[in-house]
Image (cartoon, rainbow, N blue to C red; front, side):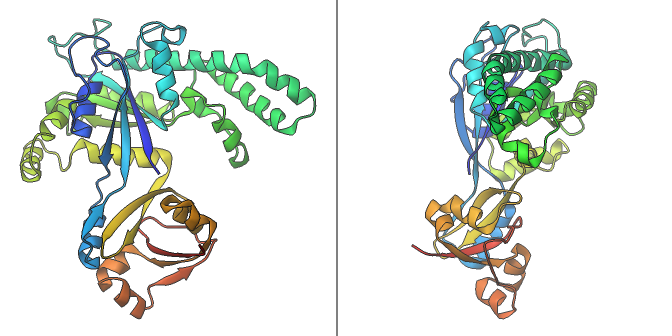
Length: 365
């Protein structure tokens, strides 16, 4: 399962600097002028998980294969994007393809870096982006409503559900609130997702602060945190400049540098964890002589669904899954000792996979 997170924000807030740091590439041109990113740049990064190395060591695996996620550096947005201003149409289309959105907000003062609005105000920046997405959602739903209403009046049950979701979404959007605040049941979730609303996507506000504020944040980031709580969104404090410097260092050098700043890990690790939390994701592992591999699934997925992430044939022909908890696998010394200790369980189709499970699937071909 590939997670795709779009990095969005106004021009010159640090999007491309952050992208370059996270992906350790120089594909995005981080320049001090608006619209330096014309095409969305996509970079894949390994998801840091210390458990994988431990499993490989215990299992004698020759190779480690971490789970991965994609970051998309999307062209800077300006007011009027929903009507095609700037690179608006392209911007909105690129966001639709992402699973979640990271709003990068400038929370630092620097006279040498131009701000498109000539002032540093992260809440104003956030509201510009959110407003443009809400306007795009409004237009999309208003165009769609007439056709759905006609089908609903004709007695189509699915259309009645969709019409109700559209109307509930429109109420919030017209009040200047994002669609992710729409209250909905589990049964309605699929239909709601199919509306493809930009403001329904999980959101993470990334407060890009100066180096001195990376560990504790600053007054500007505190304001953003309060704002995010009212918009059902998460926040993270990060210094894109620090991440850019870290990307050029060895692991040992990174550790020393982080310690001098009062940090315990790179911002990437925290960003990934927040992304996982936003999307309700978790990790299970497979371990063998050739490789130890991490797989990403949704919380609540059952064993056949987890098997399907490896290959659709595994899900289709699923018989059972040998399952060992991570702690048991490491503490007892691998698969064989875990079996001997009675810690290797055979689980069936209804088993809900837990984070950290080490699994071996049996299936019909």
